Image (cartoon, rainbow, N blue to C red; front, side, top):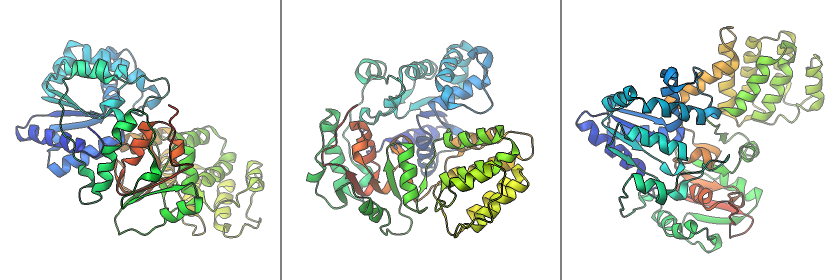
Length: 456
């Protein structure tokens, strides 16, 4: 099913039918954003939480391995390390193939739904089939034009050779539902260009002409103007980059009005906290200064002269850095009494400085919470962050109305207004389609020329 044609609505409607007869449903998808979208729709349908379990495929695999390590043949940590996802799936395959667990699945769920099936790799496909053996009332949904998880050597499932062989195709007409009452022309255009994108043919963006769509040559000033445009209260805006570095750079230039969406693994946060956990207390202030520079705009004054002094154990309050006296004082306080408690106090002080703008809000706040928890001495900061991120995958993110992100993290989400910062970096027709189809009302595209080229 193409993006915006009611796939999430259909998933929730199927669960609602099962709920009417008090039957339980297992729903798996690929991203935590997708999990959040499904949970939101289930609430709208009034589906009883006791009758549905929603998770990612790797999240369900992890829970099975953690619950049955003897059968899985591996012992996993309390919270998942998503870089080991393939190991979790391999272990979970052993679990679901055990007769006792086949019986557990069969007794626990009457129906099984898998969304975003285009992102299944071959091992995940086999894992799903093993669950189907226990829960034969199964429906899978997906869109081959949104399969963008084929990185790091992953081979995605082939629809014709593998999916349709296991799950009979159910053709239906597609209606652009996401855009009803918002921008029907945008929704219809996204349906109309699908054949060309599936054939890897370029789309002439300069030839697109309907209200709410704008194509522009790369222009940083015009991009900023588009990002700062006024919209009615409550409407959401997404600025899309391609890589994490792109998103950080864009958000920094937008002066904290937009915040960066972090990956669920929290790789950026884990990297900092790993160094902090391993550091001598005398190095806490220098580490915090460097981390703050990565999270705030307006901290150019924390230059090498500052960080070098902090690395040597010297204070910096006497140095003239206009607007940053409170930041310097907070870092000096850490230098003079280097503890996790002083680090979190300094982070609160820095966060309140009006001359700087926080654009990595999620990272800054969750790192502060992790260090605060670790100050008790019962857990490392990395361990505390792992607990926080694991809770996030179960409860979902708090929505933000101004976000900078990338296609891998927003697939399955929708926003009123979408700005693609450089379509020239979206080097596959599938990534381009995912980016284009996030918008509900307006879509603004910047690129080096009007014909995006695909190299993958």
